[in-house]
Length: 540
Image 1 (cartoon, rainbow, N blue to C red):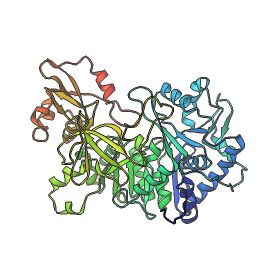
Image 2: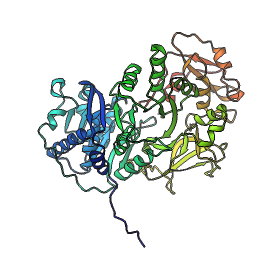
Image 3: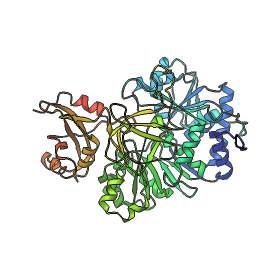
Image 4: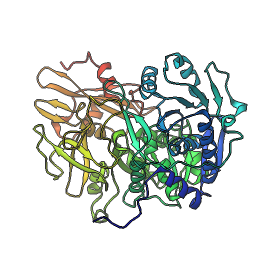
């Protein structure tokens, strides 16, 4: 017996139509190359999305065609999210921070037909265009007055491209299971892999991401996604914000500029923001140096890599609560979110801190389990640590055009590549990436825990830990530190500060000071590059 309920399709078009009709007056504020403070409404953006849909139809795009974007967070990128996906094409967001060879591979592997690009990336595409086998044209995301001279073939100006197009469009009836967007992994091992999201997965992800125990979004919020739209759809906020009617503030290319972020927060009364730990380090650094405040900013979510408790405490001094979140490209990306439970209000600060640094509680829609090396499921006791597997309606079931590399096991579980423990309340603790965990004397050491402990030292700006060869223990941790500007910490004091925070045998024997720690294209510490940098280092 089936339920007697209408079979309405869960599509991004439904988000757009609802936002246009119900939340049309909510604002979108953007920093762009041709306008440092652009302001429009959702209705303005969706009207222009209809014009863009007509322009795309005029070029001859068909359902399923891939259209790429190489762009920052702004209103034009937002328009493309809806114009492309709701027309039946696939919006393929590309990370411009990747190596040119990776970008070339991604475009050719996805067989993108058109590329929409910020002016900043025109030189990059000029150098690559003869190697891009499927690309038929380019659109530079600017107005005619700021259109750069370029050798790109069949190139258009964004504003000219949609100028004169009708602002009405009959959107096609799409299946909720049809592809809506694509995002490639950063490719730290081998070539990047393509994850294809569906309309259904995007809508469900947006609903759950907005729930009170997750991002807790509503129409009264002002949200600034600093996490880029080219990486997992700005963690879904390009869909969830219009769904609830929240005001959006896009910082464009100024995502790591503490002064610009502070100006935007204060001018637009931003209350909630999303970014990786390096973003919050930049913001705190600017606030501490300038003496300025961000009175309206009450909470942020930090993801991408572990956020040290010391950074959370620094943010708290400015009135900002940091919530940890965890996920991956293959998960759209939401898997867990750290919002305190009521009973924690009566616990000690130390107990609260223990939970604050965890990756959060498993959200509805995601199933998780941890397994040992023999594939045995481990208990959720907060102690046992194993490989983390996930499944759910917004978790990928395979990679694009890589049928020979299955993404899930025979029972439909996706291996995240993370080591984790889970406690009785569903709080996830990511203990390390499988490839980054350090095995010393036959026992595991969590590089993440050692890094977080080191970050508590007042003279440590950023810390990273890798395993290096050791004559007795096979491998031992090496601590790599960027000192706080103007400070000169000594090795002994930094290592001594770890005592009592982590197991004594986890404490590295050596600490190396550097000017810079390499990061991946998505803002994570690049352990691969660090291991290469210190490949000749050996403990004596």
